Length: 304
Length: 331
Image (cartoon, rainbow over all chains, first blue to last red; front, side):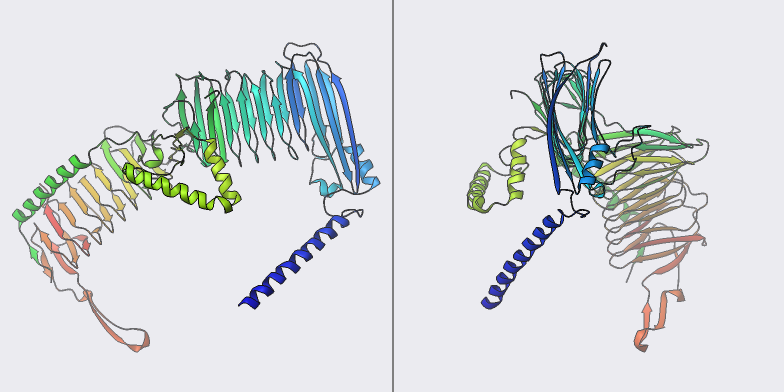
């Protein structure tokens, strides 16, 4: 019996050694041109800072649309947008690095009252730009371009900020209407006001309101929690749904009748209710929707 | 083995006792339930001049069907209040259920918990950490019941189908239907099927619960496993074959006095009572001789009794394993 155990532990030891060797081989292989792992033999890093000014227009709007890499926005007492970008390009060869430089760009523009920053590349479907419609991953391209975008913006702008991969989206102190989205990463928005759309797919969603939302707002996730902190005195109509998780509130609430949806299709009457709980907090107000699939939902009260 | 009586007085005594028992049970159980999530859908029929067919199934919960004078079908789904629906706060031990325990019991529980927690603290895995962090995050908050019933109702060509997530939680259905509707209903756990005043055909199936039909007027097939089957007819102009069966429970059926039928009766561990004069027949069909696997010769003698009421007619089956059978004349 003891002998067997000793052999087992020897086996484990050698297995670990073998694995280490395999990892080393893959890492090394990635340095050869055309390897199928993550692109990476040549690395180029660049940082730049620039100031974007709003044109004429009533509602100032900042639209930051990243693809790979984090986005961080801070609202301040200022009149323009100060952009700081850190760019990291990795490629399997000099040719592919050139292709990366040619195909992927960070477009910046001030179009009327809208300041726009968007990462454009093979995944974008801009009309007439001659770029591909079909992005099948960096591995197939043999290069990867990541932008880490930070911006200082006026407090009261309408803000759209999003990324898809490789980082979180963080917003601080912006008090206009918001649309803050991510796919593979978290979303956090602190000290916001107004309301808007907050969502991610794989990550946590955290929103702290400095003033309670006055407009309908939605908070959505798929694999992760939704944590939203409101000011005391919140009045709202709330819809909540989670499939695998629990829902919590610091606020007292009254349950509202559940609402289903009636469809009529070719003389067919179809009523469905995908188990959304409906609550009213303090006499009701703007509709706040919370929906996740695998995660908890928490409605917090600031200064509890 | 079975005895067949025509003894109305015995039935009346039995019925009276049952009613009294039911009254006491209602008093005992008649506490108000906690507020439960409910959902009501009014379903217009494609052709209100024709009868509707209602099809509904539940895994956990019961159904009450009432005939009404309206032209629509009204479906009310009520989630049965359970522990998870009570608005509670997440305390030190989260959703841990301590309900119904004395203070001493709770103190002992807490002491044991903290001792165990202390002992395990050293080798708590990441998952444990994670769930504890989650619990801490919701500490002191009100729990919002995840009250969805997943109700879906579909109507096409006067057929109304009712589905819900009764596999996830216990849901009771209260359905109002036009008088002439037909029903196809099925329940499995934790609920009875009760139908009142509906005059169409019905096929009712339960597993762990009873079936009660009052004022039936057309063909009824009612089968359960653990529970009674009670059906009263107010009229029965014409009907197809009917069956009333259970495994553990009585069968109690009131038929119009003029009904003409062929009957099959079987109660393995119970008595059979009838208001009707049943002409018993010796049927050869109940005994079976066959050569089974391995060439064994097997004779099976059926326990069913065959007979006719008022000269015979369509088939009526009354069958239970542990229970009595009552065949009454409707008044």
